[in-house]
Length: 305
Image (cartoon, rainbow, N blue to C red):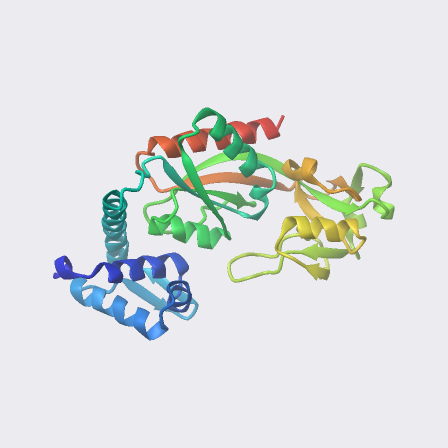
């Protein structure tokens, strides 16, 4: 092997490919051409004398050798970045935590946890990014996130099948509810039978790749009518308030629901549950990340009371 002379740019490109899942997405994020990204990866594979990526029709996946290189590349790049900061006279970032979160976690859980952490450990700096589960999991694997708050639906499978398995901690398990316009006939009570949801118009998150359609009550025995699609949960709820359709919502978000929306429990059929899970790579958790994880746990428990 001849990895000693591999340029750091190749390591950064490789880490970006591992995180983004495709050469095209990595090239766009880095401002490179796809051919330039391909050349950097090919050069790294020659130096490692091993195939690091499995090329698939829908992107790339790390090979066992690729996972080894990625793990060590992350360490090398982090040390180089720390050295550059120290030489530039910038403050050390030992207290920085990089957190990823799924869409609806930003409504209540995330801001409350960050506010709580600021009160107890003001020196800890947290940077965050929103993303889908596949994107956040790849970022954890690539070492560009320390923690990720993920949403999970039955049957609550692991978020990926890579090795080693991610370390998962359930922060909360809540029932799924349905949000209806306050002027809708279904809003006359505080619950609705699942049969009454047939024939309704829905406001849903569009399906994309590995992410499934969200916003329609699961298990309806009909092809649902999707009147509007939106990724942002608040946009969906405001469309509901405007009378544009129904959508689903975890019970943990009820207090953030805008005026003009009534949230109902659903009777009949299987009980629908959703989990909020904190994911990370296995191994010792640095103290700043442990403090943030505890703040997320405490706030999630408070929201369930």
